[in-house]
Image (tube, rainbow, N blue to C red; front, side):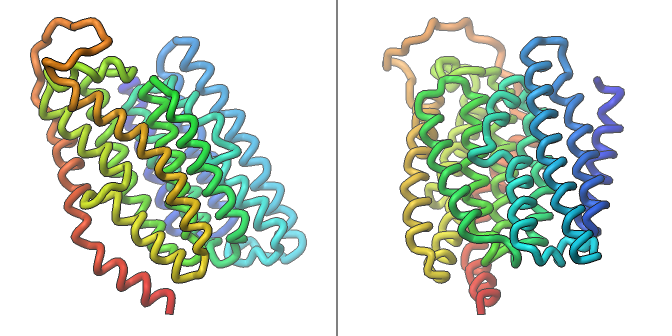
Length: 351
């Protein structure tokens, strides 16, 4: 696998540059297909049935979304004669394209592939799928933001935040919990893209930093279930502390960085008179808050003389925490200082 890592990174970089520099439908579709194919080796990197199953589910889902995208774009070219993404004037075709991109991102009701795929991947490979892989569809939705039907997008976002919260309540596998967390976070990221696209970029940036920190710390602790977290603070206190900060940031509690995009999103939705959307998203986020706090409690608040339900493990030599983990974890909370400036920018865009 190390032989193919430079090829994978180079291909991902090229597709990202295409997304950031092109507005033509065909070029962006080709970049989508390249980014889809290049992630498959990351998923099926082991000859394990779970990895093979995850890669198959991922490929079939992404292929279905790609077929819908090329279908809607072909009809758009026939009717308008233009291949620019900003010139999709047909509302039906725009909605089909939006739903196809939401399938690629993994929002409800197209979320079924995300937890199963993440369960079959390593935490490091999951970072690419949950952050970098979502950049392409997000850029395309950014370019289409003036044409998107807010009713469809808000309904999908509310369903995603609610369903992800409910499914995460009874989940004990940490990788699936991270997948449900990603679904809920992307719902908050996309619900405001029509009215404040710059706020969507900020939310995705903070989400990428925080979810990367969480996955890196989980890989450092070598934990796969909630029960394994019960003794993590004794084995690696600094890494467990960084995990606790990341989880609280993902939950959106102040003064951590995860609070900033949620605060600005609610403020913008209220300004656009979408009060019921803001209220429903807030209520749905309480469900996610419960399993975030449960993870936080198990990782840092079950120290002796508290009793645990897990078998006590032998203490292993504690490794030094990676500098990358420290940098990401410390960068996330300090970004809350940009709140006032971003709020002013968002209000200026609204006017």
